[in-house]
Length: 519
Image (cartoon, rainbow, N blue to C red; front, top):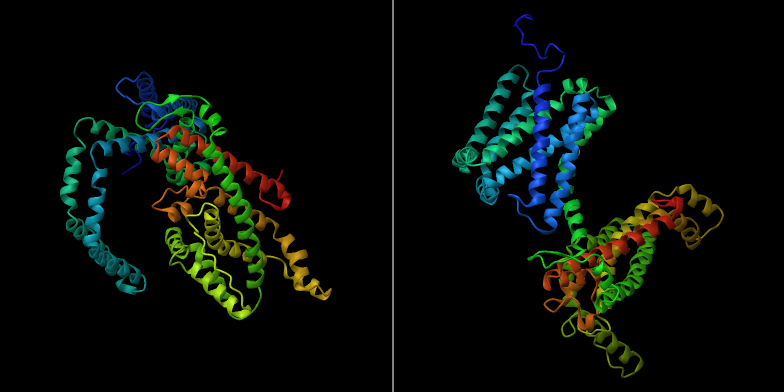
């Protein structure tokens, strides 16, 4: 093709041919988002109630504002217009594509596809064989080209065989049939158009037209690569978090309409005897459990940091409880705590008998009702928590100790310092950042205590006898999923969040320059 016959990529004004269609799409997208905002606000065609409606209104309002910024920036041909337009197009592609697939009923067949793949996964061996042949082709010398073609066709054959074996051919035909039914084609077309313009805006031609600098281009590329994670964060974490904040100001059972009550839920918390009991339990738990999970871990890490035979084995042994499943561990401890056949009471009985025979006394061995006695039920939870947490804290302290400059210990040895003085005057001060982190994480885990009392007390209520093991998270669970007081449970959750955030911030600020944050 000669230069004279080549198709021009820009108009006489110097603008790319896609620029005017982009402007039309910008205006159309803004109008579409505005109508959607009005429809949700006035309940016209889109009938939603409660927090979902308000969340959608906020999202659509932000999209309309972003669309307006995109139009203005596109007309001015500045990078802000490119970035805003790219973001809007990317979101429209995802949302419209999701709606189209949902209306086609495609998500209901995901489980069937997974089962079909599991039953025919052996055919992947053909694809893997082709991949191995492709890897050896680079060392084949003159036969390199032939081997690569063989590998390529082997992988293609394997994928075709796998597709046929899974029965995907009828599924693809059904997909093509459903995509043109009803309004599905409109959502699908919108998703495709948005995707096309998003791809155009990501091109080098768009970067030159919108005068994008190298730094702005790199930031845009970075945003694109993190977009899946950001979208997942917004959809499954930030979005529900904002919705729960709104719900905390309502009286809602999850089924009927939510009634806005302002700060009444938070006011009720200060006079709720059960919530205050849960706070009291968690404070006692934290005061006892956190030092027991931190101080022994520091001493154990100092011991494991020594160069003695078998230290690697003991490091692994002490770390095992922290990687074991909390459900399995708790069930084992539930058996140990059994007052009739549990090994703890059996050990107490045998030790008492041995002591009586040794000194000739007649003491009766105590047999605590570890789980069903309201005076010691929380102690049982503390024992379980400390046992599982101490290994993880030990590893953190051990890592911190191994990063301390060895010349400090050499100088202490010259001065005649013993192990205890080196631990007190060198190790502990140098471990201050690690200690702050360990204490903070242990505190957060303690304040979020739920699994241990829930499993230990099952099938009885997780609050335990006399609410002895009632914690804020357990109380949240009872309100939300047993009494269906979703609004009040959300208030409990946010009150707990404020408490955890405040304590953690205090830890880090008190750590000063050695910590993660500074005041």
